Image 1 (cartoon, rainbow, N blue to C red):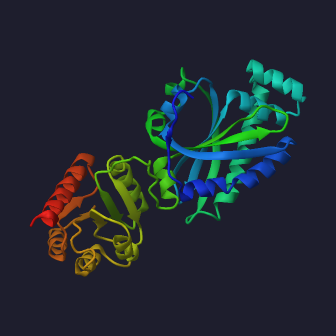
Image 2 (image 1 turned 45 degrees about the vertical axis):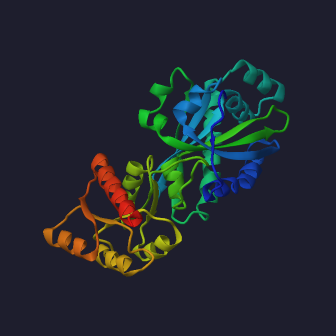
Length: 335
């Protein structure tokens, strides 16, 4: 690689993914009939476009669809040399032949099929390991593998996949008898952060402010994070009852809250926030996909500073948030 990627702080995501390594090493050892090790893991942030363009090699990528509660994609990424090695091991070729094929870049159809089977097995290992470790149900499914390099990246992957910020876990992969390689796992930053409702920050990342989004629709929370996370630190919860504790634990600049939620509705929660001495100065924007004049009036009376109609337009949403964060800072800092 020509440039180092932005190093991330430690996170629950990194800890959880690394905790799958013992199972992967054991099962891959049985699968390849070789001692298999993963060491020196590091979680980094970039885009796949940058990652591929900075590389001096081509890759084979296995796309894993993320299903059930979480939605998105995960990618297992192997340099072509490592893909040939693991594919050839499944074909039970002699070590000398495998090394020769890898040095020549011979990735024929049989090796490609064997590599696909290898990644399918790793997909199953990750699925079994992650299911009991994540807060919500997850299922991983291998959908395809693709040979990718600088020249074909724009046609092999969709533009939004290439340019979306992602978290890449890289580890040294050691297969006894062969040169060390890399085991690379990539997941969208939005999806990776959603696993544990955490914000994974670069050490020097600067945000305009911190937003707490409260909504019992996880789809709407995903949309909010996608719209705002490039400029704001966005915390989310689908449990209205946890809002007050989050407001007291974290520094929140603004609350974005749905009016219709199961359990505690937005109007009631807004009133509770405004009655609490530790949170009553935080501006609250209420929102709804089916607003009524009565509810808008109730929201303002409960203490909300504004009202937004779903679906959100990004520019309108950001303008409203900027306005009320700035206004609140002026109010708090005035003599």
